[in-house]
Image (cartoon, rainbow, N blue to C red; front, top):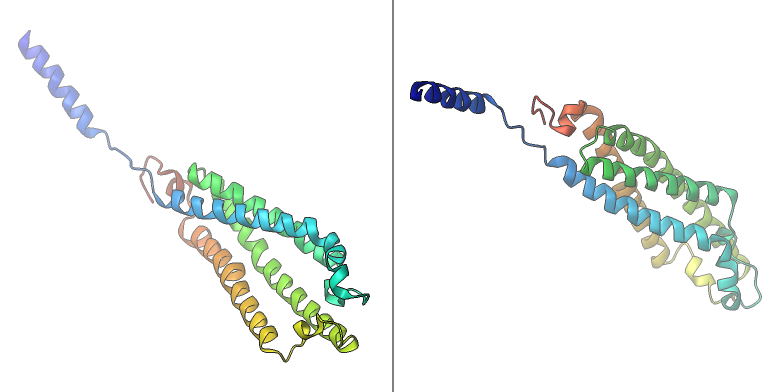
Amino acid sequence: MSEHLEHEESASVDEWESIQVVNRPKWPVVIGIISLVWGGFWLLCGGLGLAFLPLSAGFMEQALEGDPLPYGMVATSTDYIIGVAGLIGSLILLFAGIMAISRRPLTRPLHLLYGIMAIPLSLWSYMNQMSKAELNAEWAKEFPNNPMAPNFDPSSAGAAAGQVIGLVLTIALGVLIPLFYLIWFGLIKTKPEQITGGDEGVY
């Protein structure tokens, strides 16, 4: 009887030792939190910007002192297209972050889709802003006595600094981060088990 129990205990120990404990990968949670925060931030900023876009003329009416709205501040269809596309991209990144935290394989195509959208959209947005800056400079030449005109002078130090800052932010936030997602999920983490942990424990 005792020998039988010892045999069963030995078999149970052997069976337990043969079980491989698969640790879940930690990187999806890290990237997921970053994407979640980043997507939520851009969703808030983009939503507010899009909401106030048609109201800008009313806010600036008193400061203009009877002069027309600076040409670059007139809302165009391009502004709305970029704004709506930006909101869609933010939502995609937000859900991609949630899927990453949950270690769902769906996070990979969502991050790739965001990367494919974000880079050209960021460059288009930057070019649109540069075009608006030129229009505002033209307005400043036509209305040099307006108190807002010096702010749009392209030769001023403030305007030059603004262009440099805009370019740096576009490259860092609008190009490099989406490019990281494309490389990470497009070339490095390409298998579902690398995200979920899977039975193979490949990270």
